[in-house]
Length: 284
Ligand SMILES: Cc1cc2nc3c(=O)[nH]c(=O)nc-3n(C[C@H](O)[C@H](O)[C@H](O)COP(=O)(O)OP(=O)(O)OC[C@H]3O[C@@H](n4cnc5c(N)ncnc54)[C@H](O)[C@@H]3O)c2cc1C
Image 1 (cartoon, rainbow, N blue to C red):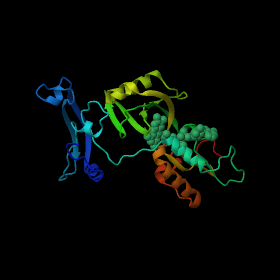
Image 2: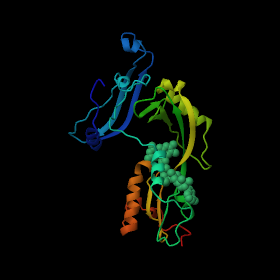
Image 3: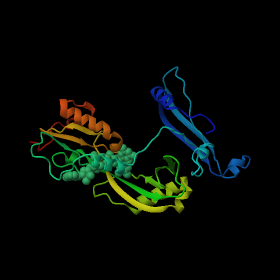
Image 4: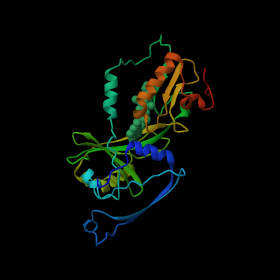
C-alpha cells in the first residue's frame, strides 16, 4: 500500500472519540487525461466528505488508500479506495460443523433422563418461542476460480454490499443478500443476479469461474437483533438462538454462556431471552 493503514488499536481509539454522521463520496468516472493512471482506467478522481463529531481536543485522520488497492489484491478491478485489514480471518462453517459433529455423540431423540434441554433450532423455534425469532433470507453463490482473491474482499458496488471469501483450492464464496420474508428461503434469480453483477465489477475473473452452488438460508433474527441465550421461561429449557448474522462467530461464546448457565445458573442480562415480555404465552 502507498500509505500505512489504520491499525486495529488506532481504529479502536478512534471509534472511542469519533461519531461519523455520514460519508459523501463523489466519483469522476470519466478519467483525468493528465494523470497517466487515470487515463489508463486504473484510478478515478474522487472527493470524499466525512461529517463527524469528535471529543473536543481529540485527534484523528481519514484512512483512504486508492492507488495501492490493486498492489495488495491483484485480482481486483478498479477500486475507488480501500483499507487493508491484515488480521481479518475466516472459517468455513461447513468444516466447523463437520468437526463439531465428529466430536460429539448424535442422537435422534433426547435422553429421557436429561435434566435440561437446549433449544437451538435456528430460525424455526418451536412453540411457545416461535415468535421470538424470524428469518432474514441470505443468498450466497459458491464458485471455483483459477484466479481467486488472496484474502476476504468486502466491497460496495452501486450501493450494493458484496463480499468474496476465498476458501482454498480455488473455491470462492460470494455473498450475501439480505431480505426479511415469511416463506421458506429459496434462491432467487434476482438475488443471484445482484450478487454476480456486483462481484464481477470488483473481480473480473468471475467470468471464467465455475458456478458450483447457490444457497439460500434464513438468518435467525430476534426483535432487537441480539441473540437469545439463557433461560427460556420454561423450567429445564435453555435457548441458544437469534444469532442473526453472527452465529458462527459467536458460537464459542454461546457455548460458554450455555455451559455456565447449566453449571451455575449464570445469565448474561443483555442476552436473556426473558427480556421479551417475560415467560412466553403457553409456557408450562
Ligand atoms: C448467507 C448467510 C451468511 C452468513 N454469514 C455469516 C458470517 O459471515 N458469520 C457469522 O458468524 N454468521 C453468518 N451467518 C449467520 C449464521 O449462519 C447464523 O447466525 C447461524 O447459522 C445460526 O446458528 P443456529 O445454530 O442458531 O441456527 P442454524 O445454523 O439455522 O441451525 C439450526 C439447526 O437446527 C436444525 N433444526 C431445526 N428445527 C429442528 C427440530 N425441530 N429438531 C431438530 N433440529 C432442528 C436445523 O436443521 C439446523 O441444522 C450467515 C447466514 C447466512 C444465511
